[in-house]
Image (cartoon, rainbow, N blue to C red):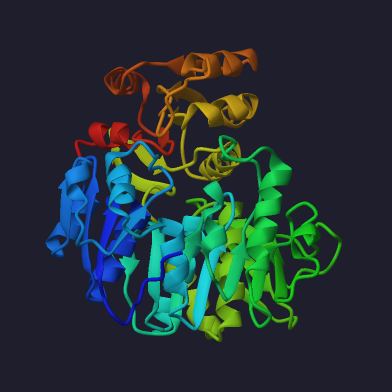
Length: 465
């Protein structure tokens, strides 16, 4: 594998530079005086931000963009071998790395490199950890999979020993990482276009845990079924956390929550218990039991690196979430509009459960399924999860990287929901959905646009944004 010499900046080209992670890495290297350029399919707020920082961005991926003076080309997992820039890279014999391999090499430059993994909650927990480290004045370098309001973006280049990043299991990219501290939030079936089954996914998370050095730490959700299959025999130290006193193995959790209560906006407060038998009062400004769990992981990490507990509590209380995670978009005609990235049945259940505690008359969910493979794999689970909403509206499936529809459509999901006895509407265009909502939502209703695609545009259009 090609090794980047961070002491001698070179020329790096990013294929897909407008992605949330790739743009952040490009910015880190540019700040370290590398000559950075790249391409993307279209202009976006992220590519415009890169251009303002002096990074050259090509729109459209063409073989002539790849020139012999480039020292290394970085690809995302979405780039296939028929991509013209990939073909040109190979033909010119240029060194190339995946995004994950670059991240792994970056981690070696930091004494404390923190990788936060899990099927759900990575962006929120990474943001919570980031907020704590920032308020503790540790000057961390951050790579977040969403926009954190505190730093006005998804990336922060710091000057200390701390590096924090999300660690995604898709295509086993997190196995290229070199963390000293790892977090596993949960392990469930997802990305079934890559993994064979849940056992295959668990095997990957076990391999991720094995990356941690003997003097490293793994913080793991003790409510994961048979989590000890992931942790047994590891050379690193293991710390568990739960929303209840005992893990799924019946062992005392190192961190757990009790006395969870909610304010009028659905924000939880709870008693935190740690392995010293001390208790702390924690209150959050993000909704849901799932965020209590995310906060426990963040607190365990903060304690581990020596952050004062009062600073951690204050940071978590001030954290109001990241973009597209139960994000308040505005209100119109007395209808509150929230946007959420949930695109897996477990995430939908968590979001709608949190919404149930939020003031409302009727809970509307406008859901845009994400990828045909995921929709097909979890069809019944999607129907059951969405049924927690009072009114359900479906948009067309957002295909993302996929071209084969597998015989699945939003009409298929609509039929599954109706078979459970719940009313469901489907419209082929966003314009039709917007008109339907304008005619049917009333003062006091809560409207959530939900999905990993571009469904957020519906709420923004209604708000005139």
